[in-house]
Length: 85
Image 1 (cartoon, helix red, strand yellow):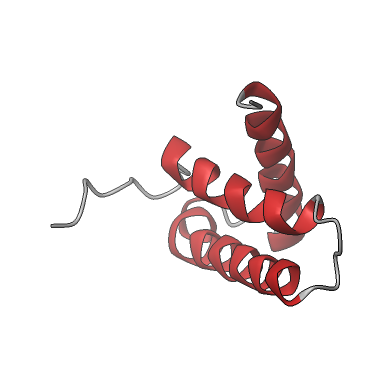
Image 2: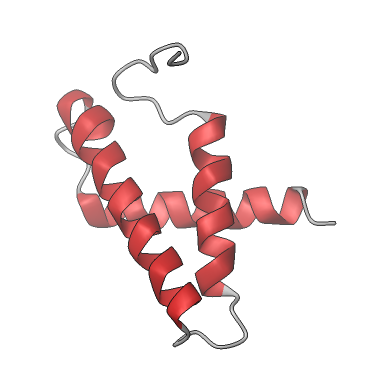
């Protein structure tokens, strides 16, 4: 059963948590060229693009993908800092 729909223009906390897990696997990988790190980066980029196209771009045409990606990375770093073991 799908969860509640997230409004256009919104990126949820769950979205950031999932993206942060992927970001952590590639940005802080011991071997950034490993298959696991490359796959995590690919999944991260795919999800960022999907969020941008489905939710952000329709509501905020003035926001570019590059700016959105940079903001998401910043939010991922913040999430990881706050939730570090």
